[in-house]
Length: 476
Image 1 (cartoon, rainbow, N blue to C red):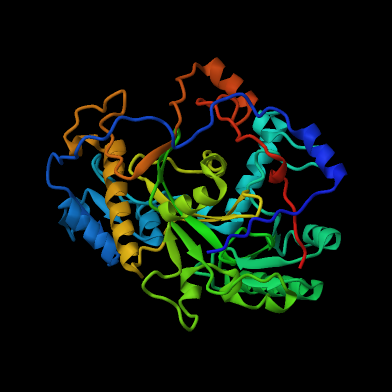
Image 2: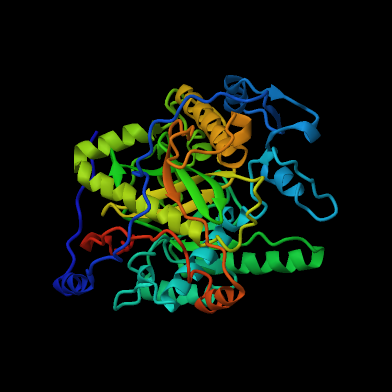
């Protein structure tokens, strides 16, 4: 395969400004998968684990069978309920709230939409980085042009119809290509590219009409996001791709999260060509499997996908291990900061855990961009590799959830301080935040005056900022 590695030269003025802005990053430890933990001991269950599920995906059922757990249809006596988001959230609704026993777990947080809805994810990240800047936290630092140096996680994004005037200012200044997405859409449905102002205005009118209809019918408004399109993606064999990375969160307060080594690299079927005549070619621009499998000639044996391990090996051959280690550190940094942005909004129920599917794009300068976060990543096994990876993923996820929340079901009276009894499987520790200390009333007042993140434990460090990390938006 050929690899696109060309990088555009910046002018001397921008180079000099970058040199001025390249300062040492905050001198604290970066949260990373490289935390050393002794090899996990084999898992032996104390008793028969009973599960309940409302889903019939083959990898999920294979995972339960591999774990040797028992299907228990009576939902009142299960230990593990693997549910869809709606049914999981229904357990916490007023008037029909389910009262959990100490040894019962469900696979979603009640407030998971704070991450999984694209509009909420965008608003929360924007709010978080403004708070960091206001508190003069090192990670909230900006360059002289007002760009965030360490929290530049997402492309400029606007919510229609509310941010339309701000979008107009950006469009008139930069022009180029933008992408419109429904806030709660999935599988590439309802996504369009626009490069003309009249196209954007039509979406604004559509959003206003939908709001009026929702008010009249007393229904929830879905909404649309319009984002600046990243027109200089890194290409492999001339094709655009993105990464699906699985993250397990077992607690938000303190934050405890894990990264799964067995993710996916998803390719478009059509070679990328930055031309205005191609903006309607969804097989060139959207990597979603649900979109790509509609193309004639779609290869069902590999599904236009690599494993994340295969992707990393390929990238190390092309760029060298040092650069790819740095790339993944930036990806992990991006993931941790997105989780921190919702810490105060999540209901940290001890009966909950969640596995997220993070989608990120890498541009031609090896900078990662967060596209979206899925609270219900697809469990379909469209290829044999899918089935193997997802079965292993689900088995390891549920074992880790039991370890974190119900270790007695694994036969543990208490967890080892050195974490050597963690049943990690293919998970690696991404970030384990220390529990917040118990405070006196006076200390609580002082903390409140410092703001939401005034006394976070577990220091964080931004990845080193390289000159090529400044965004360069290419117009079509």
